[in-house]
Image (tube, rainbow, N blue to C red):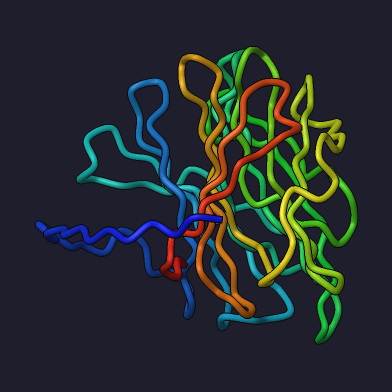
Length: 227
């Protein structure tokens, strides 16, 4: 696989706290939907705790933020919420439900909402032990990349016609170097692009591209770590 070498610069223009009701608030996601900003993040006692909830904040101007929802399950550590804007106009949240002591057991769960305030769920989706990190819709089909939370480590591509029944498209999308968190986007021409984090050896990120039906992928080693 080729390696890309590139340097980019960025400037931080402003920094402001919008939520701090828990001892540990982290793992944010942000989306603009229906002329409103939605921010979701985990609230817990620490980075790893027996229980944690997902807080959803809303803002119309990006300045004033209000709590819209608190999603929680007794005895469950809800982690890393990710928004998905659905073709039917509803919002969807994906997250991991972690239970038990180390090593924790993971299952992907999801909620649906018409307004971002009232959420239906959680519902388990995908396969136990495979964490669907993020998803995106294209041509009325939702695709998501999940990763194995235990050995053997791999990334897996799923698809779903309703966003709830996730079926594998590529069972081993990538292996080697402990692939895990990902971002998935689609170009107007249907090309899929996946940014894939790795934390093993090697730990350099991968950039994958594919055309429909997304069964054959070309991967490029970015030469840097992400995440």
